[in-house]
Image (cartoon, rainbow, N blue to C red; front, side):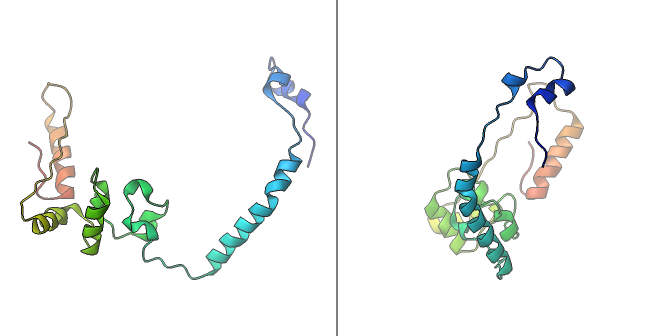
Length: 157
């Protein structure tokens, strides 16, 4: 590997103050300090990849969306979008109740809550588009189409 010379920067970028731009420091000790840890992590990753990985869900299924692992959607491809994880302020107790019944989609949430509580419950989403001027028909149709893709019961009024 070649040696970089600080004074070479000025050749490519005239007017650059080499001393202010670059700091040369020997960090060999810091690199050597983490070399063992890095090797151990690589070995652990290789061992995991060599083992049989269960692709049928991950352990964070019971967690809130903010606490899902980076691979949640990969390991849980059957979770619809939107799902119960999209509900703001859903308590852990209610989330576990849904999970115990196999409820992940929003369309089933109202039925489960109604049966559990004995009361009909409505979920409302309010979306305001634009200012007070009328929306173009094409925008209304596009938004209406997106809503109906989620559920036949969602409409734009």
